Length: 234
Length: 185
Image (tube, rainbow over all chains, first blue to last red; front, side, top):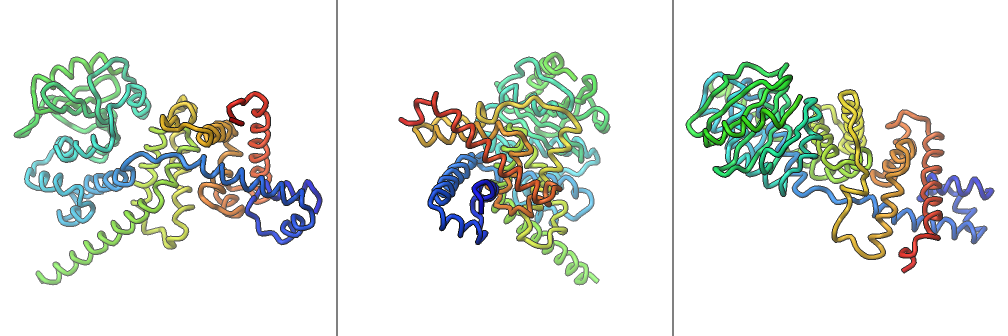
């Protein structure tokens, strides 16, 4: 086997078991040296490629799927199947079954601001989320965030009544507050002001998007609404 | 009547449980490889995370079509590559360099780490046509035939690209040596 063919084969497949290559290396020590060097580089490349995986990433993927499954089948299937879909969603499910009602979007919004769900989202996220990271996600909605809207502790896509939305959780002075971006064209009927026993919600259209803000404190919700109106552009 | 209904629902929910178990096993076994692959393909951590999330959501939805668990890796890569392509249909992002942000590990000190960082820089500077088959081979352990199938190329082309990829890496390393005082430290 000539030098060039040998090198080409080794570079294309350093762990080759081709008998011709093995024989060629046996016959020529220089070839064997080249092969050994390439194998050494190969293990370095493999190590260098092993970049760290985000913490709790597997749990996050499982939770995402549970949430998605749950919102997809909420109306079609009995509650215990939804529960089987994800143990992580048990809290949300009992909440929804108890609540009843008919507004799918508002119900899903409330499910996403459930304390347990939010604390999971936050714990998976780590620290606060930068404007750049938010803007990468905002690109899906052709939107941009240009000002600080507070300490954002989580920003993740979620499904509200089967519509892909961006859910941001912001640490306010009076507790956590959620802001959702929903594509305006797909957004379904939702009252400007809505509430349940614990939460106040406010929704408004901003150019091509619908923004939904939900929190425990009514004043805080309207403050964020004002900030959001100038901070986001679509 | 009542008992028959009950049995039916029970079997539906058992199926769900089975599917859930299978999905969770899949996530646990392969999420790290798939994430790393996405990182090398996309070079941006948050976009890579999102694409992997979408990939696994799609995988969940069509989990029944995966008959052979041994083919799971290449099945997921196929979904991932499709999801990544969809991203470009929607919007072109400005990407940041993989070595500048996502991989800068503050604990990464010392010669070995330095060398790895250099290798990452070189690998991320390879053009996608060379980088992708290389990742498939090293990271995912795919054979030449499997790579050819994934990329829809013939095997000779794949082998040539793999050869060129390593050739470029070697040349970049040699080119670095004269000015890289720290490397020999």
